[in-house]
Amino acid sequence: MERVNCECGHVNPHGTHLCESCGKQVGEDLSEKSVDMRYEGSARRSQTYNKTPLDKVWNFFSSVKVGIWIIVLLLIASAIGTIFPQQMYIPPNEVPEQFYREKYGFFGQIYYQLGFNRLYESWWYFLLLAALGISLVIASLDRVIPLYFALKNQGVTRHESFIRRQRLFSETRVKENSDEQLDLVITKLKNKRYRIREENGDFLAEKNRFSRWGPYVNHAGLIIFLIGGMLRFVPGMYVDEMLWIRDGETSVIPGTNGKYYLNSDKFILETYQKDQEDEVFANALSRVGDGNVIKNYQTNVTLYERKGEILYGDTPELVKVKDEQIKVNHPLKHDSLALYQVSYKLNELNKMTFRLVDKKTEKSFGQIKIDLLNPQKEYDLGNEYIVKILEYFPNFYFDSESRPATRSQVPNNPAFYFNMISPGNLNGEKSFVAIRNTMEPSGDNQLQMKFESVEMKNLSALTVRKDHTLWFLGLGGAIFMIGVIQGLYWNHRRIWIRRSSDAILIAGHTNKNWYGIQTEINHILKETGLQELTDQTNRKSETS
Image 1 (cartoon, rainbow, N blue to C red):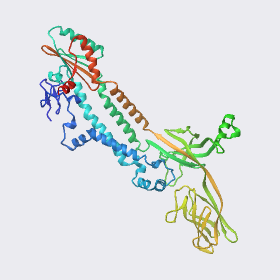
Image 2 (image 1 turned 30 degrees about the vertical axis):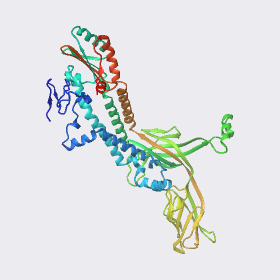
Image 3 (image 1 turned 120 degrees about the vertical axis):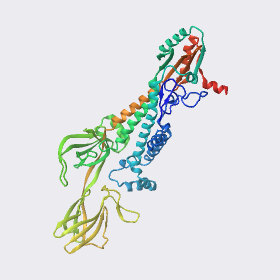
């Protein structure tokens, strides 16, 4: 599109309302209206171009209303995500669908089915964040670029119509000694730390222009902050997961792509003992009652690093890195990883031992030990005696249709459906065995799985955290606060002084705090004998 030539000789971009240099109205005559100083009257792309698909996308995202609606949608979505716990915060061995349905009822089930249990990891929440970032970038560029060039190109000598249509204006008729009055005004403005420019006997006094960039510094900080938030979706950039590990167990650390492994040597729980503490502690413990007061709990671990790649079916080669005692507020830290002690579980069922016996004679045909975390399907006792596990329910209960089911994969209440095969009965005898409950669906059996013993282990709950996005979040937050301070505590002030044949025209403008600039300048003008600035907005409203 064609550029607009002003009579002062300056060439303005298409769509400009006020000449960037002299301030004269470009286009239709609005001489009776107050001058529009928003973005210095310069052309914004969103208000100038609207033909191509790129223009329409640009104009859509440059709208402040669109940005506000995106923020509202983000706030609503974020609030929905806090109604029930996100899936990352439920017990790791719980089945999510069952957990939300049983703990929160119908609404919990709907919450799960709609995918709100992983709301902050969903693609549409990510798109909302991206849309907000795009809106901030486009809205900022649409305004800051024309504002920058308008302020950069502003001339000292302004058109008389520009001066007269400013909100703060004064006109003083003078005959002689005007130079002395102007010199005194300029001196006092310099004392107020105004930057003075002179051209053709006219003056422009300006200070605190940097404050105009405060909102855009805010936007830059928010954009960096959003980038940090979106980087949490990138694998390896952010990890916040729970690791449940049993005594003697070696597990891969979540979020490390199998690079690091952790072995729990032992979980230790210490409690205060009344007879072993000093008098002050003993008195305090006596008020607690008979309950044990926890003094310390920790997990003694060994950290391993994997060497090389793992081929299918191979055992990883692990190299010891270090031993560590993980306590509350004393995490294990290594290679940007941090493992925190957060919880524990004592005496979880680990292995159960059964003996196959004849119900009448109590004759034993062998013994099996079932690993409740990884049970075998079949146990051969020799002499053609075989025990098969047809079904296993780690946390057994009867569902609404009176059928056996499991609440989770944690062996809190294990139950088995056995098939006991013997030389005299190759088809086997079926038996459902749970704690304190044995059922024989095929009738009275000859054989029985008799409970012998149980092994228990302690579990330790560790939170695994890694966050490479903190630098982005911290930097974005710091830049945002700089922008807030920059735009909050300073304001851009400008004073134009123009000589005419028999008068001195003075106009003032600021982006905020009109009372402050009017008081400051009038205090100077009062000492020089020049007419004080008046607020033409108030005068027009009084006249009307």
